[in-house]
Length: 200
Image (cartoon, rainbow, N blue to C red; front, top):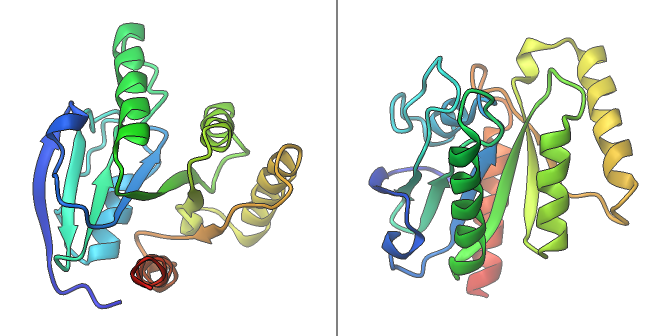
């Protein structure tokens, strides 16, 4: 897939105010500071489409971008940032749940997981919730350039072992680096193929 146009559409805290077009939508979500904005910018080859920040928990809104006038990329708030109050975390949680169940054009969640760390409980809990809710998702490992091959393989095996305890079939796992552009073609091909299947 060649990205010819990527435009910011709107930011909302309310799902009912999200864009009403019924084109396919892919939601990017992950723990705070997982490198979500950097990955989005790398995918669409725009340096500042999604706002990056050194302060975790920056994304507090549902941000919609329209890609090639054909599909939506949705940037969701990061979960699990410690400095956010419990009340704010609960508000985020409700917003994500409402989004997940009310967005009829939502095709797939892309759950971003930091390759540098062993499986984190927050990520595993969220993945479990998606499974229980029968919501489609894939896993995207980020920052693979920040860890050596041995460390990455070890953390990936731990993640697969954890998932194997509850999943008969493991979800798709993509390996990416926003800095090096790794995984861009594979992710865009996945989105392109999925869109074509829906058209068919």
